[in-house]
Amino acid sequence: MSEAVKTTNRLESVFINRKPDTKIMNLFITAGYPTLEDSAELILGYEKNGADIIELGMPFSDPLADGPTIQYSSDIAIKNGTKMDDIFQIVRDVRVSSEIPIVLMGYLNPLLFYGLEDFFKNASEAGVDGLILPDVPVEESGLIQELCNQYNLPLIYLVAPNSTNERMQVVDKHSKGFVYCVSVTGVTGARTKDEVENSVNKFISRVKENISQNPVLVGFGISSHEDAMQISKDLDGFVVGSALINNIRALESENNWKREHFKFVRSLKFGK
Image 1: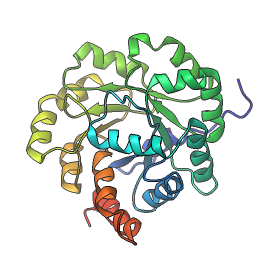
Image 2 (image 1 turned 90 degrees about the horizontal axis):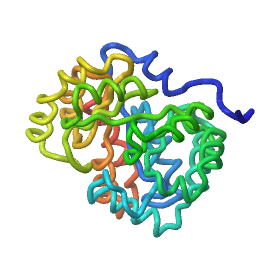
Image 3 (image 1 turned 30 degrees about the vertical axis):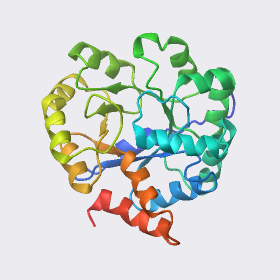
């Protein structure tokens, strides 16, 4: 094992230290969007405005779990020339002044292209705290799981409304950090309140019954504080992604867009 592998677990600490009356807010942003130079500044701004975990997307040309909004941000990031080493540098830049947990979210192909051993070694040394790989099912994760264990990088799995009780239990057994609860079947994207609530209410009790070893964060479709509180009321917290990208797209032509964007982030967590 590399000597540079971290010995502390920032991700676990977030859940251990969570106050019972608060929810963990995990924010997704694509690395290199809207520009490579913005990425670290956005992460630090998110932390100052209530984010507890950052989910940093690794841009990919064929993101199978992502809807049009995050596909758009990936396309822009790729056009900006964002490479894997740039993503590690973003994490290193954040680590100069912040210990906020950073989880890389993406797909297996870029990892294979980069080289698996190099990817895990460099991710760990940069200060990454975990991985979400939607196209690596738990049944086929053997080598990836071994590398995650070797480099102390929790592998976070997803469950959805079409997950069986048995599969939820398998995911709970193999996940580390938390389990990502997908509120609707399909790709990412902000949805209407009724659509999200109806989907979540149909299976959230099954999640609670079958996932007991890990905290659970719920995502896919949250675009307001009200959405977040309603959907995560019986869970540990929530994830917001597409709504952040949409907010950036709406504001980025303005000179003070980051200030206004951070106000939106704060409203997601605190409602004001």
